[in-house]
Picture 1: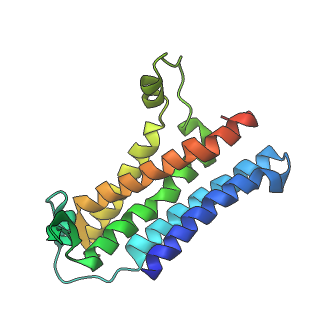
Picture 2 (picture 1 turned 120 degrees about the vertical axis):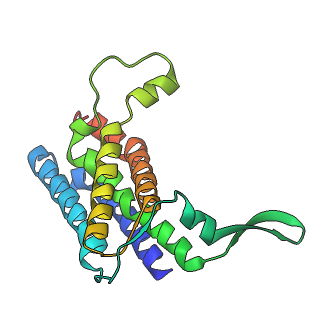
Amino acid sequence: MIEIALILATVVIGVLILLALPRLVRGDERLLQTLKVIFAVAYILIILYETLFTRSITRHVKYELSLFWSYRQSLSFCTDAGWPGLCIADSALLKQIILNILLYIPFGYLLPSAWPRLAKLPGRAPRRRVIRMLKNFPWIVIVISVSLSTFIEVTQLFFRLGLFELDDIFNNTVGCLIGIILYQLLLRPRAKKSGRT
């Protein structure tokens, strides 16, 4: 649980730094963008280090192609005091799911912060709010996230650095999606006020 708390703290601190950064550089837009790019590249390198270089080589290739297998093994339906609910069947596996989600949250808000064009789509926005929200959503960031996650999983498979699993790609994508939502709610409005996005 300490790992989860540390990564969660990193997520929160990252958002707070990005919110405070414009005040710290006081109008120097070039320095601000440079710092955001440095943070994004550094975080991508952290992801690569954490997922590839901290792993030891195994004897055999390991893979799991069944989608949501980790959810089925880590959680189970049970009745506690007569009420149906979810029980934790494998806490270590559940921890890995949570860590995979948390790991990509900063990726989801750092990418559009560092490269605002990824979050800005050309064209007129439709009138309906839901359609406008979907049309203006930075889908390219999701595509980049899925690509990076897939690259990492294939590399792990090829070099026998762990378990290749579709669940990790799914969990990373969920984390990126949460990061994008944080960007849309907290960081993008600030960028719009200063005229950057």
